[in-house]
Length: 231
Length: 231
Image (cartoon, rainbow over all chains, first blue to last red; front, top):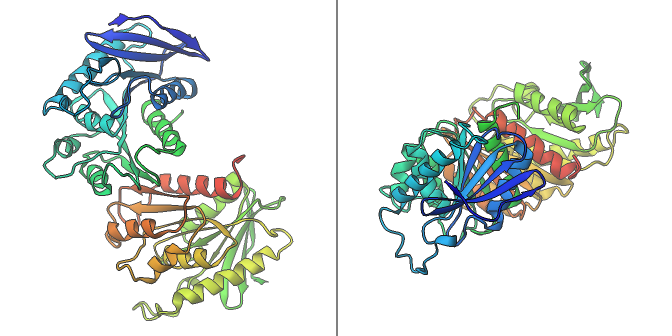
């Protein structure tokens, strides 16, 4: 893990850019105290690690809940953008690659003295769910997740198979008027999840109109499951 | 409105049995202060105005949020039970009758010095939603509602037609493993609601296993919409 330029301290939140191998990321931690837990934030398609909703979610997790958060650019996104907007980078093995990238990043972040072996959660919608569900299925360190705005079009789709392997508590988010993802796909994802502790919150609005209530619920859910009932 | 025997004062909550015409009910108010708003609680089939979840919800609304709550026995339920368990009392006009009963009860409760013209909300699942959706559609005093565990089996069902006429904020509850009500019916109810401010929370479990989180969400939703953002 290599720190890169641009660290900031603002309102109790330290933000530090880093690289792990070829993967650029951002780490947010509370200044002065060790975080109680760590949330991985997987951005959606056409977004990146510094998109407004990613930074906003990360900062509120640190400020309100004493957690740490980390985001990385997905393949062909953010600093890793190589100009292919036609979807050719979305190969069959792309989810496997992203799972390995996240696992390497968790190794590196947990090895930091100022973070350590805290409980890990995941948050990601749309493309962030497409990669996050396989990650949750394979990575036992992840103890809670928020995913949504994605799901299988067919029962044999990879995300449906992966969902059955997820056992941690999950909150699923669905946008009722989503113009990109069918309601039935998100319902199928929820149904397929192997978790006994799962719930789904449905809000009105289109794909990119996820309301503040969904972020409030995300924060509360991750905090309750990772920091404990006392939070 | 006639008070009947059995009033109690406990932990800041005054509970008073009453009758309005032939309809027996219970009113819960804060002791010592006027309530900030009033929630009508419509019980489900085979329950009644003093079922545990009705009393529990009423008492938490009073204690946590300074609201009042009122419940009445539905036709053929509770003190109005006349022995017909075969559904013959479920006539085509039963919803109209229950709507009128609720409207008369709201008139009577709002006329009380200790309540007055406060904002009104509704809470009812299953049979409580079947009657509550037409009530919300016709009663402009109702400014927010929580319904669920019910919905149209066919698009021409009365509850579907009524739902389009609802315009107040609504939270819909769905039990994913409901053995009595199809998921598609509740999804259709949510879709049909005319409200622009609507959301749906889906929990796992069977019809009668509505979890504590659903009651937490009900309390928070009704309080935010009726008591205001400051609550």
